Amino acid sequence: MEAKPISILHIEDDVVDAMVMERALKKLDLNYKLFKATNGIEALEMLRGENGKAKIDPLPKIILLDLNMPKMNGIEFLKELRADPKLRHIAVFVMTTSSDEQDRTEAHNFNVAGYMIKPLSLESYTSIISVLNAYWKITDLGSPD
Ligand SMILES: [Mg+2]
Image 1 (spheres, rainbow, N blue to C red):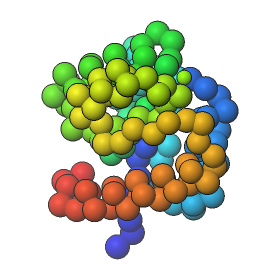
Image 2: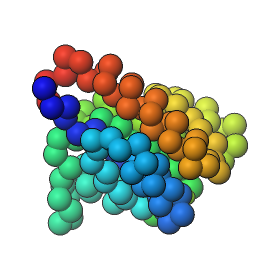
Image 3: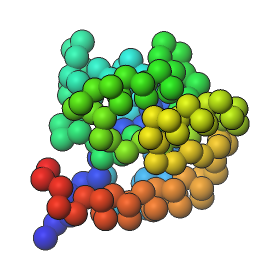
Image 4: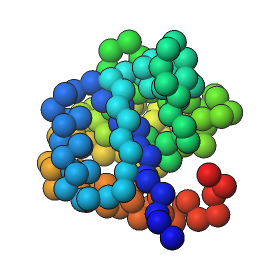
């Protein structure tokens, strides 16, 4: 049976970090669909199909989230995501330059699956994606969509 594409939403305002992630995905040659947002507001619009943004359908299995972003930062985004019954189940991995303990504690209070400190090399992104791919395959078993 043909594997379904892995749907990933990368929320990141840094152009270079976004590019490195894209390169890591290409390098791994996985069956994936990458969606990109540059702040929390844009990401929520894509997840909900609001303000003229096409809804990501089916919803992504994994969100990779930066914390320091304009308009709506990662912590504010997590708060909204976890308060939304349609979106609260999505696994979120934080990738941030912030080594602030308060950010880490807050993120964990919103049930993040992982917390990684940037900068991350192409190799680090590649290994993170490989792990997420395995994670996705396991957690996707028995899921209806
Ligand atoms: Mg940032």
